[in-house]
Amino acid sequence: MPGKENMGFITTTLLGIVGSVAATYAGKAIGWYEAGEGAGWIGSIVGAFVVLWIYQKLQSRSAGA
Image 1 (cartoon, helix red, strand yellow):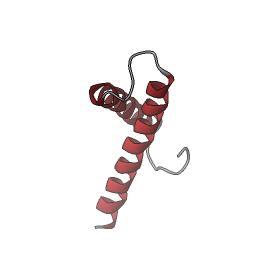
Image 2 (image 1 turned 120 degrees about the horizontal axis):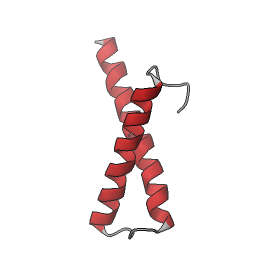
Image 3 (image 1 turned 60 degrees about the horizontal axis):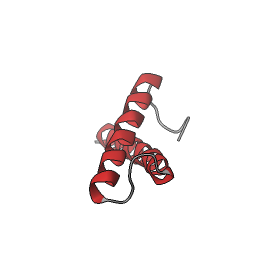
Image 4 (image 1 turned 180 degrees about the vertical axis):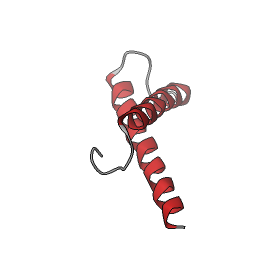
């Protein structure tokens, strides 16, 4: 998503961290993976992209309204 969103470096970084942490905790709580497994790393990346995508959609919706 780099270059696609219209937000600053700090906002992008913070949202990525939030998505990563949320996906890690959710994956552990559901039982998909345990600490130290590669799936947790992949899940955290996917979580970061999902949060950034949701934020981008919410921003574009509010800008168009």
